[in-house]
Image (cartoon, rainbow, N blue to C red; front, side):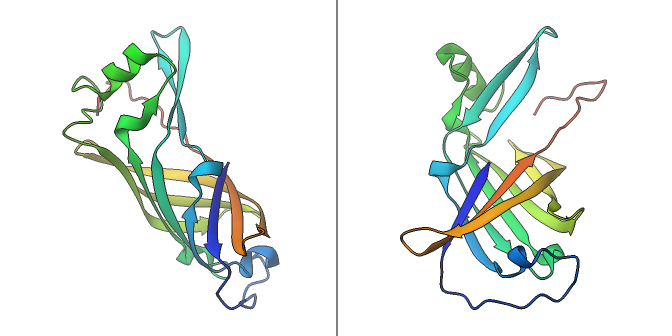
Length: 175
């Protein structure tokens, strides 16, 4: 689950479309990913017999949420490649090497949204460009609005659950 937060300093907006969740409509503003309550993980098929799971511990991002007009929302995420962690030290070193991510030459993975859409009552899709090394591909991320709250420090928090799947093409291309 991803948790975003912002200082509670923006005015509450009014709902302009009946299909927009009123709880989301009041949350228009700029949010930062809360790394302590968010994770970026992956699962990849290994040797065609098992899955390998991992995470990227260091990441940052911004969500410019337009709760009244969700298609106007914009997301950016930057991930520190060296923070890859699969719980196997040798595998992590290999993933950071030039054989895979080449973290020395390409230290960051990035996502920049190009469009957003509401796909259901609490469901949204952010589409954009994912760049790994020097290769950029189009990627869609499905989001489900979880809820929002104001924490004890006055920060507005909003939660989204998200996932994406990229099927490997028949002729596999490595990043």
